[in-house]
Image 1: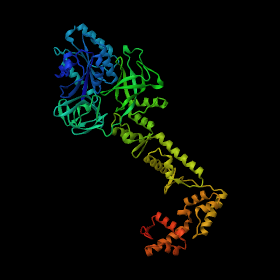
Image 2 (image 1 turned 135 degrees about the horizontal axis):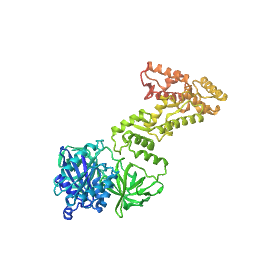
Image 3 (image 1 turned 60 degrees about the vertical axis):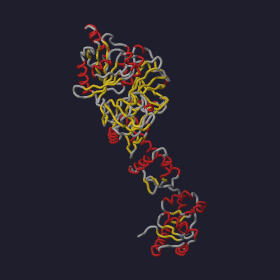
Length: 629
């Protein structure tokens, strides 16, 4: 489905041409009839000889109504540039044409109207004037057709030219992100509120749930119309009327957006590339930092304040980057076009491309930012993905370029290719910038080395200690980092402890002596072992050595700091297990008789076995928690 729009100076015959093509009078307002001029947008459609239907938007030509012209031109696929044979190329012809160029509308037809009122010499002169002006522009090769709406000369040729344009224009793809900028709101008795607009990004269906932005009011699409016919499904690129359930007329306005996507993200800040016009009235014009401008995108008109790199002005005819700041959030997409006007005197000064729809407040102090912008402006999906990751470091797959004119499937296909090429890291539902990932690996290994320097006798360190160091990483990313380091043999993980595979503690002679002393004391006191506090006070470096021996499995630490030689603990544990297998339960008194130890040690011992899920307490006795072979 395609939509055409008119453009041209006031009273050059745009509305009359549409009527001749469609038999639809787009001047619907009483004041338009009275004054004989188009004030607001008009809408029509034409059925071509091929049977295809094409929507047409008629725009006003008066210089005071340019903002309505901009609203109408947004979303069209091609333009019919209408020029009066008597007057030729006029100021509003120029402004309208420059707006068409700024909106990147690449296809069109030139219609020279009112040819019945001029002679051939005048017609030739106007045609030459038009071709000279269009030289080196996107419409240079557009067909120039001569028309009279009075005697119908050239009308069929216009229809044929429209039909011939269609194979060259790109059909708007369904990218699964339907949105409709509202250009009209009215009420139909018995039906309720109806809105119209040009549908972009995806299909809409009868009965579909939708959201109105910026109010976030929920609605249901009660019915849909396209070109005066009720439809079950409206395709992207078509003019659509939506009957909204549960919405009053005063709850929705021109410039609002109907979204049928899972999430709507908006921002008060957008980063853009701006091109300033070169028309005569803008000679030597400079757009200064912090200037107030009127911003148009879709059918939205809103005041913005502009911020430029290094606070330097942008001059007419030049292109540059800027940040626009608004008093309310806007839901725009990467790749959307916009127009800028100054409020007083009202004048179109330029337009451009949205390159960051969800920007943060900045002043271009980061030198790398301009490099990123230069990549984004190309709208190359590979570059966009890599630039986005460079900016945010990591992002969930579902959020990557969500506010863009790319489909999720296209984004994921490109992500997969980049992953295969080693350009990015994919980790469960997260995507990570390659350089950032390498930094985290280096940071992790550096931190682990520091831990060993601080505690040279430690063979490893608790995993949760490192989780606290890397608090800024999402849990899935941290786990992915650990798994990567394990698979690449950089670290080992055992029972919640991280250690270097090749690390061996280096002991001094004094430390070796202390180890031997501790093990000797524990071996010689199997039923009356010391606690950690006692040993630490008796032996040099005792705390560090005890931690090492626990980690190595040489000794076991019970509650209250009681220490046992591991072999001794295993002997006691196995005696209790054997007893329980035969007797089913054991009391504290029976443990005392069986092991020859006091209550001081019995309770910590049983608690340890409970901890290891060997036993469990049942009233005043212990039983086996699981059947052991």
